[in-house]
Image 1 (cartoon, helix red, strand yellow):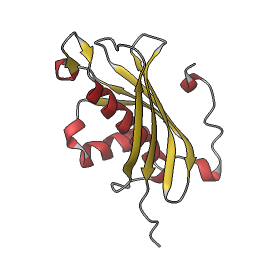
Image 2 (image 1 turned 135 degrees about the horizontal axis):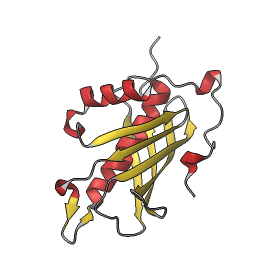
Image 3 (image 1 turned 135 degrees about the vertical axis):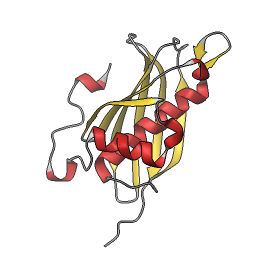
Length: 155
């Protein structure tokens, strides 16, 4: 079941409004993580959720012509970071404190779609999951559960 096409993230409320647009989040990622520039594209950002793609090239493939595990891990991590940034704004010091990934099936050598959702957004931690798909396929190739440590609010 792909949650992105449903409305599981809930309506925008004052406490669930986006702090950044998808374009602002993309510009910020380019600024603070230039190493992924040209490798990802944010396809959508809404309260408590993000949809991103890893633009798969030969560098992401492993022997056998499948997307490598490290590339899938990176896609999951960046997608959740984008979802978190959407909610808290430009915070470069929001960091991964845990990411557990289960590889479910062999990914195709096509773009990887990452659908991230925040299940709990607190003052110090954000927890959620990321489902990864090969472009054009309905079955997930991997599922990641992740937690981010959030910087202390200033002010």
